[in-house]
Length: 414
Image 1 (spheres, rainbow, N blue to C red):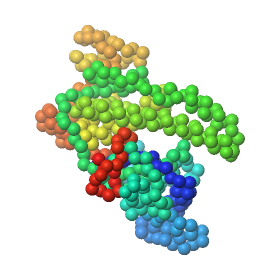
Image 2: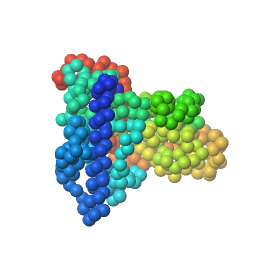
Image 3: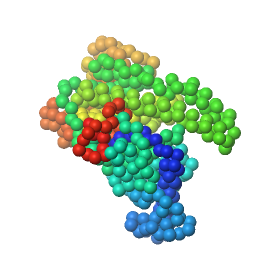
Image 4: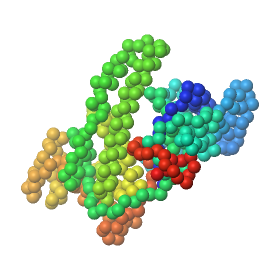
């Protein structure tokens, strides 16, 4: 399976200029290729082959006065931008034909130089890792990397990213084998919410950290300072970076919390069951800010990625399951209840229920039944269902010694 490891890098002022030039050239090549494909389809519904397109927008374009500066950057980065365009079109057609799951993808759009986030990808031909721990990028030089953990294998590609606050990151993709944990007996159902982030079927309660709500005052003051600056001034640019940094701190804290919580759940349980919430729909209600702050979709994605890596199972039950209306003792549906009703008594068996705890136990039993009866599932309980690993897991930054001696030259190994 493929894992992604992201590290902070510190380019010199000259390297930042070279990176800015590479970002711009990759964006121009992408836009030129997209315009050529759109023009060909408009003219006669034809499609330009990838090789011919690369020759037109890279090789031939370098010989023209208008695009002669394309020769100043690595051709590997330019070719990677064309591969990104091919991937965007492939995702669009797969979404239209139903081969791609999830929300429908749109056609590729032109990239803007005003975007606060810039990125460029280098394949194995465009970068190398020095024995000193520096990252060598073609026509950019050796860049200092803040290693926080060793890479488990040689990376197949690296993406250099400049985010909105102006920081630079190197994101490596490596191919590793899954690390299955020892099987355990425990399984857990989770009821996600806003008052409590999660209530587990075993009685544990995970509090909602509310990272955005806690940082609202700081964000508001930074935004007010930005709004008072004259447009186009250097002070406004500085204030914009402060706002971006404040939002980045919130996003990073939330992401780190999701990874730590998901790791603990995956380590302690053989299977985790969730409700398939319509997060995009809930994010359009009056609770939109709280729903976005909770990041249920990110939490579920991280759970699924870690389960695929460590040999666990993550299952989902239908969002239409009346988990808050069903008694987990006698399984009688008691009817709808307003949100302010947090405890209720079953009219059939007389059991007193905590609303969230009862819902998590209903989700647990429903998820176990769904897993047992799934097509291709086990013939008897207790047999693990193989689950296909996702393509890329977004890595976290854990503290570890970056360099030790090893057999792979230029790669920090444990």
